[in-house]
Amino acid sequence: MLSFTGCTYGLTEAESEELRIMRENTNHWKVKKINSTEQRVGGFCPLTPKEMGIFLESLGYPPITTIYIASGEIYGGEARLSELKSRFPNIISKEALATAEELEPFANHGSQTAALDYIISIESNVFVPSHSGNMARAVEGHRRFLGHRRTINPDRKGLVELFDKLESGKLKLGSSFSRLVQEMHKNRQGAPRKRYGPLPGIKGRARLRTEESFYENPFPECICRSKKAF
Image 1 (cartoon, rainbow, N blue to C red):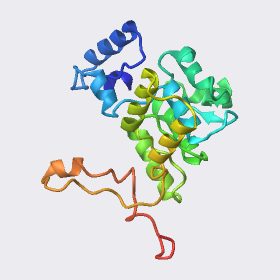
Image 2: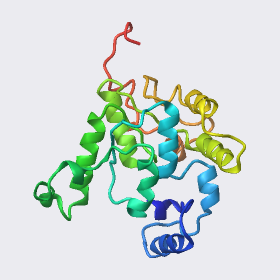
Image 3: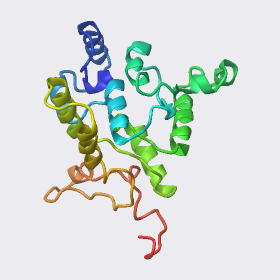
Image 4: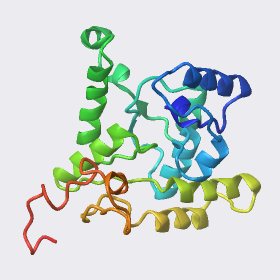
């Protein structure tokens, strides 16, 4: 994912180069030259483990919160994940929940392994995607279909501005920073809303690309409701 999006923030030069080569060598990825800084500032990069830790902490989640990592191997391994674990030590994954024997039938079947993460994401108390990829959008839509289960969709563009101010010393972690994060996300927690339509003035197939995905938000067409409920 990092290679595809061209996001290298927080990585070493060697890691960035490894991702660039991977992108160059993947023929079906059409875009090869990507400005990582522009991607991050535009909100198109996944939040790093450190950023996710700060984000969740600012939302008010206590350190005892159990967090399931719904993904494959984290790029950078335990060293990078430790930046999240320092704030939330109760980090688990499918490898921690299931035995090697139980997971063995799923080996070499990436889609089936992803399905395990999908099921747990659907059933979790809260779902917080670090990046708005296809799976994250599908999970969000599925959770809406099941009764608008709490799904916190990070405003990555807005958060990057706050994180950069933290790094430069213009802001400090604390109650004031938490209030900024909470205010930014008070309307991004999975409450019922109609799917966003296409941008005005756009016609043809391009019109479809500006419309919010049905799989991300099936409301109102595929969610039964009463006038009283909404």
